[in-house]
Image (cartoon, rainbow, N blue to C red):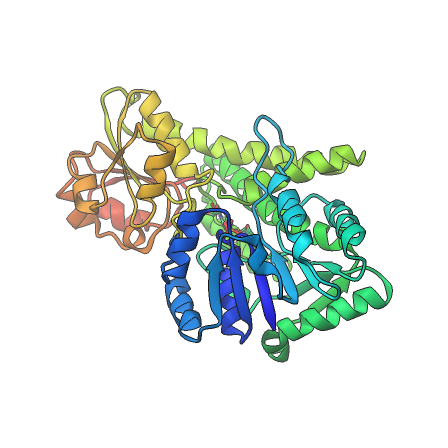
Length: 437
Ligand code: UDX
């Protein structure tokens, strides 16, 4: 099947390569020339495990090309819209300008029976509006809203073998035809028993918003428990293990620490609140304000704990922040808790060095005023305290005896609760976790 993928960021680049892997003939389109040149040369424009191999494999078959021209979408039978929906400046609402321009620019290249598939995360009501725009120009073209649930760092697997497919479709024959076409696109994963759910546009859009809100709520719940554990002298890690054994609760997404960041959860819960407000249902989501507030409080808490750890004042202290990406196995630093903490520590007088195996180049673009050191041993050298904020394997597996010889003072704040307090304390370190005694 001939497919176009509009937008080649974290979502679209992986989607385009994965669709070629499934046997389709794919063109990926993006306005960013540098990104397209990289992809065309078989280079992944960002760090995502498995993507370089997938790109090479797909391009070797001749079924995957990239272009900066929307005209190259013509001739494809299915068009995936994968552009970003960032938070609007100074507001909670999502900026839909990329989605709107993608649809506007794609429409002239659509022909009769094409299917357009929206994958971007959008406020409920957007699909209906985009469908009306397409219908004016191409009455036989059908829009499906097919939200994407991929996690960065696991994007290849999540795209090729997702937990489920959700199709938001119009009623009647148009919806049935579009479902059939999308089933053909996803024939391989569907044959592997991936569940597929069809529903109306609004419900499909809300599935995505509510899934991300649930995940954010789960993380903020355990972080709220960490605050109470701190006050009571209890251990949130043991608490999470114990409540997580209840099947109804589950242990996943109950890791307390510096909280969530990235290009999705923070802006998606805010956009959801903004949209609910427009619909007159703001009360229903007022709890998300608290979820957001608990999450942002974690960052201040890390700064406070670091100050305590170094004796009450950050002024002139050399602090090394381990990890800059918003999560391991990613180079994404959008709304990264680590960088937000690093910047606050620096503003409060500390001399901060940030290290990360993959995300330093993106970090420098965002926070040029911080110092960066790619080599971990050099980064920790002579530090007055270490602050672990992204749980990359190399930090989880650090040997406290080896690292102890490099630092000036053996003090560590484990902002992700991934180290063994006993091992570190036995090696002579002052260890502090988040919500752990
Ligand atoms: C998220 C959703 O998981 C995904 O389904 C959706 O499509 C996009 O948004 P992603 O942003 O890639 O994916 O990362 P995710 O793994 O959800 O982590 C988000 C943040 O939560 C990270 O900063 C992570 O460190 C943090 N987190 C996660 C916790 O603090 N504790 C946890 O227990 C789990």
